[in-house]
Length: 331
Image (cartoon, rainbow, N blue to C red):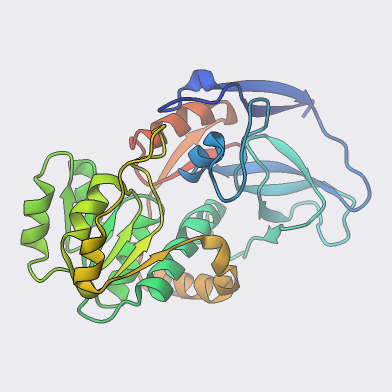
């Protein structure tokens, strides 16, 4: 416990990030003052939005060369001079890409002891899960019999969207980038069908799976896939724009969607930012814990051990090579 390993941005990447864009630093252990606690990171969440922070174009702020990478973590309190946090408490907050961190208790939440393993508080019971829950239920407004299409169908958000869609009685069509991912979406997550956009003719496959059009499209990627689905919206369709995986690594923005698709279908298009929905947290956790107990929801984690391996794992994520919610097991 004599030093703290931190991952800092070495240089701002152009295009897809590589491990060389990150530096591994050993720092001395931080001290705590009154009203603070020291925590040891157990699990660190890696998420596509971090690419936007690195590029300086994310709603939550930017990460510049020399900065510690930001990220939500599950931590154990190891020293405390804070009245509300005791040694041994399991908490979540934006501790960043490091083994140890100091907090004043602001924007820290204690992990519900029913959440086991605690890494689930970074996935289906964390921000990706809440994104799926609030995005689909509040913005997508699913009804029994709706045809729901979700891209990035096996990622942390997409896999939850599809499964909540099934709970709500939708016909669920996933889109993913490998045969293995599509097989998991259907056999494990209960999607009705999952289309492999790298190997199938996506327009023809969508026509076949959604002959009457798409009632809800939950988009995590943007780009060509968004365009292809938008051409197949049914009347009064709802489109939830949540992520832009197809363009996070691009320097130039992709051309936008054709507005005539929105006009023709009288669609409602909503932008999803999870920070607007934290008031839903309690309902969300109760619902998801119940669905887990009832066997209605499953999950998959893509776990890598060791904080020093975070850069490589993040680079895999940004190439779509992850399978499930990407997590670093730090301790």
